[in-house]
Image (tube, rainbow, N blue to C red; front, top):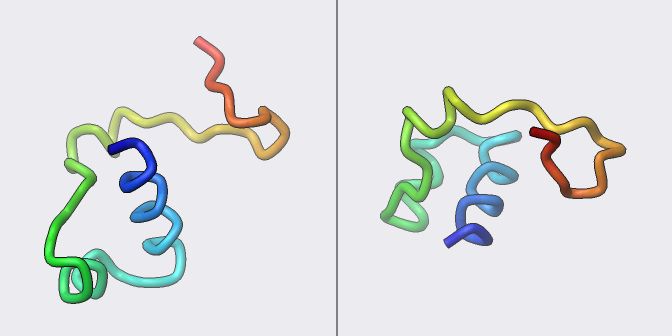
Length: 50
């Protein structure tokens, strides 16, 4: 599930959620989870600091 969410986030950097839904037919990101998500620094190496 995490990989699907990461892929959707990457796709939505250059496209809309509606385009993703038209292609994939499913939304892997909830709006609530996206609002809580903090931006990870580019040099964090894939780890979130708590």
